[in-house]
Length: 163
Image (tube, rainbow, N blue to C red; front, side, top):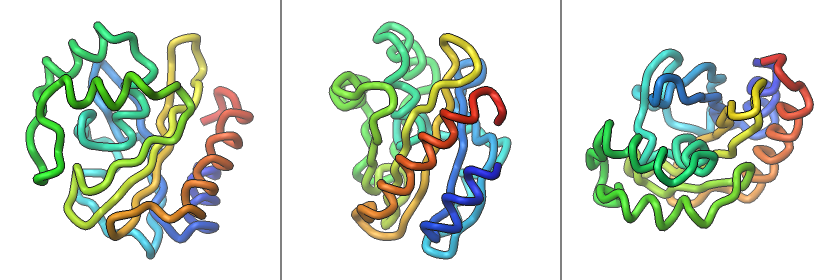
């Protein structure tokens, strides 16, 4: 929580922590920031769309291709905005180029007029990952927010299993 609080404080943007639990993307914690809109579907304890969020895509990048396909098929790929990918091949083309730990950005795929960035952070087990993310108003994630997100991800990584 301290890492999220610091990220929200230095960036002014809402900071999120998410995890895959039983093949669902779940928001584990968040700290609101004034420069981000309130997003009702990104609240603590709620499951959210793995295919249309930067948090979800960051975590999808940590999975093997068969696991990604299974997850997308199981949960479906509803359209949230005209920019939402609705075919597994669209998400696969984006995610397969990513390496775990690389910042993922989505532009209006989950909510119109909102962009998000996310990054996977190693967790407390060999195949356990967290996703740290932040949201912003508009079409582009500010460069300073991506920089702050990278720093926060490094801090979270250094904290080990102390989440």
